Image (tube, rainbow, N blue to C red; front, side):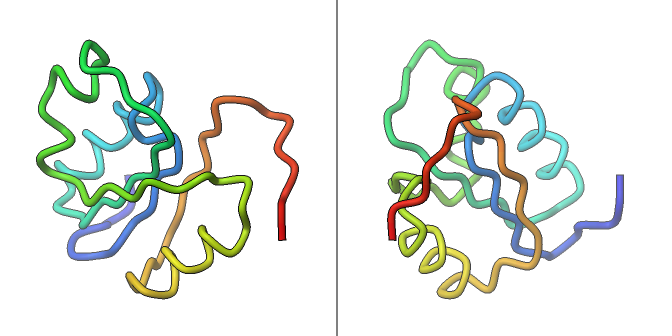
Length: 93
C-alpha cells in the first residue's frame, strides 16, 4: 500500500464489508480516514471492530454530488475510494 500517513482519505461505503477492511488497512497506515454512510448496522464488521470510533463519519447520500463535493472540499480530502452498495449510481445535482 502507498504511504497514506497523515493524509485525509475518503472511503465511500467504508462501513460495508469490503470498505471496512480497506478502512482498517488505511488506519494501520496512520491515515485520517473519512467514511460516508446512509445507514448503519451495529452487527457489521465496521462496528464490531470499533472502526467507527477511529474514523470521521459523514452521513451523506453519495448519489448527491454536492454533498460529496462538500465533504471533499471541507476536509481537504487528498484521495478517495468509491465502494458503493450498488453499481447503478445516478448523480443528483
